[in-house]
Length: 307
Image (cartoon, rainbow, N blue to C red; front, side):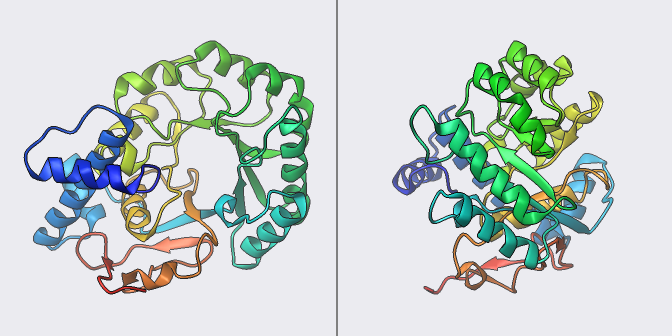
């Protein structure tokens, strides 16, 4: 459960174990999402089913694929926020087999020139991966709509596969303004947990990809509920997943019930060298795909020994 302090997560988990209700806050929903994911994994193991098949039985939706395409998020692998560092890391991701690379070029930058420096980083990544690879850009809500409008031509020159978190989902006017000027699909919704939080954006016609997260949305079943709403409005789904092996496995099993040909699943590339030591058996993936394991549940188990 990254994205919230470890001490706060531990406190909320202890409270939940003692019967306390989890608060309707970002941290509370994230802890609830972790618990619901663990419960789904345990139920699938008890039923002797891979999590995807258990979810299919629970929802009436078929398992449509067992090979899940991935894209490489290189953001946390960047040790320095420079065009050269970003380009080098992007080349590593492509060499590892990724055909799609995502970067959040404005992270860690401050000052009036944040947007121009961030766009320099994005351009370096585009040049490094070449015209045949897909570039995704995550703005992390660090820019204003007016800033994006002012630099629309620069964004369009990047030939983006999508622009993520350019505008908050509840800012429908802002979404429409950006959608009218940016020649790329708009993605967002990583913190969404309820239909009320996503329906206005879905109905607006300005959101192209919804990105619910198994941690923040409240577990796999909630992600599939939000995905069904997205499908009703012609919006694609790509689960948000800048996460470790357990959340990645759960997200891959959820993705098995999403239509083939849709956006790939996020994978955090190069964040730490010891990722592979944290679960057994090894994560069933290459640089480009995640192959669902046939074992019950998510198919992997966290190691209990220290690295």
